[in-house]
Amino acid sequence: MKQPIQVERPVPIIDAARCTDCGLCVRVCSTQALMLKDGLAVVANSETCAYTGDCERICPEHAISRLFQIISSPNEETK
Ligand code: SF4
Image 1 (cartoon, rainbow, N blue to C red):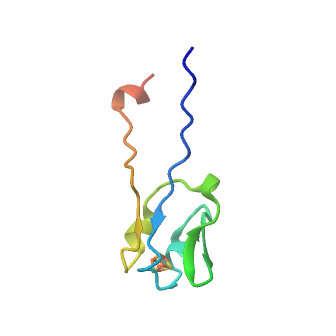
Image 2 (tube, helix red, strand yellow; image 1 turned 180 degrees about the horizontal axis):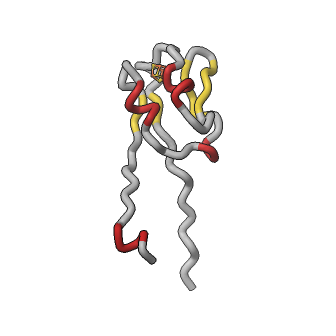
């Protein structure tokens, strides 16, 4: 019998080498998923991350990236 595949929620990846601790991503995050810790932005509340990409777009250092793109199919929306 096949076992269900458990997929963790995707969260943005933060490049510690690029982050300057400016806090813009923390301020733009509408779900308070990010916080500053020890001079670095971190995903502190992964369960609230809505994966909107707002943090990725606002980061002036291009330190945040999302590895996945979530696309909803028009056919799926009408089911
Ligand atoms: S916006 Fe970019 S540089 Fe600023 S705290 Fe967030 S990850 Fe770091």
